Image (tube, rainbow, N blue to C red; front, side, top):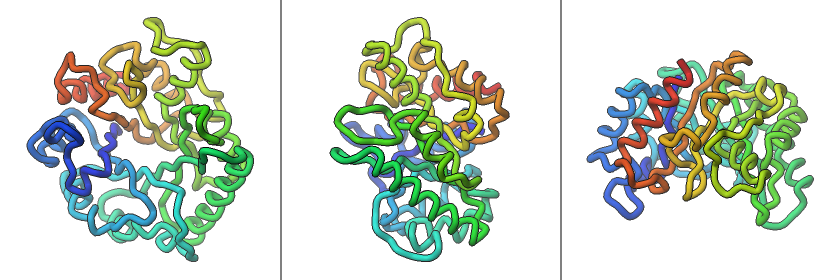
Length: 294
């Protein structure tokens, strides 16, 4: 199915950054935006992000609306925080409301996570910290027989950060070390392509897409996706420009390994070019993804 990441401020009633309602493509209401993307083919909504310590009462109304409109729900989570406990709901308390109700609307729950990162520190130590936490969480999920899967996301490489997940190789290494069916990979296609472009010394995507896919071992462990284009303003752009992402090649690679998860758009609307309206950019991105998946 096709998915769309809805920014966390929207769940908290904040619909804009600078321009009225720009987080929902300048629609009048969240419901109007959800109705539009539903009509275009989106069937899943991701919360981007739900921190461990968030007050879930602030999110409940919109989560209920999402389910009542016929969408399924995924969660972009976060590893930071100190919440001790013996159950997953105790170590991730902001998920309690979702845990109580999701079985009425969907068979399971997918949660994406980034590895631990820091401005300074040892990548290897952060790697070990991430593997240890994911093993602990996977053991909890298995012990509770929860239909929840965790997907470790590949990030962009940034010289200013120590991040063991800033490459597909780093993410695959951590997931392999965890060694649990409860933990797989979220392939962020835009991050993957950004790293490839940077490795060639380029600032922008070339007109002809660069060749290069993650290894088969990575692709076979993909549980979820984040999909966005690259442009003058960086990542999380619309897919309107064909050279913004080799989308069709990437989707074909997932089909070859029989991927059955969500193809999830992760867009930041204030990064879009002004050659189209926000709504037109979103609609065109959904349409391109739908055609690639067909």
